[in-house]
Image (cartoon, rainbow, N blue to C red; front, side):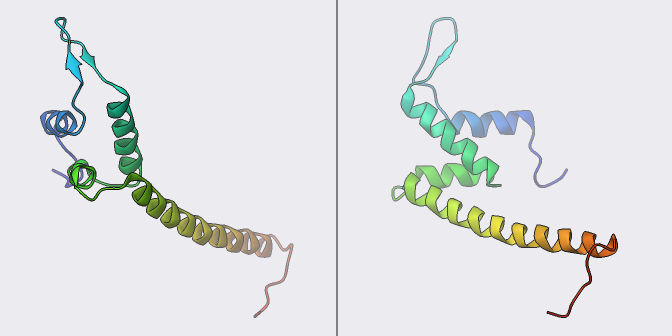
Length: 108
């Protein structure tokens, strides 16, 4: 099994442990408050950043966890990566123009 794959039960255990409902009513419906919705948003952000659920739980449950600091750090990393990709994209555009005969390449 691949390292980045989990079973349904593993995912359920991690998810349930990450996002606990405020209450479960008599019909079994889970109810969440604004605090849990904010936590879900944080979980989803960090998941998009490539963090594993177990790491997300460790991070957001830490006593010194600060969502603003964490998101600002991720924002800086993404901005740096976006800049790198923009440079790569610009270089690719120039290379395509060269191969189409639209420009001459220079050593500068």
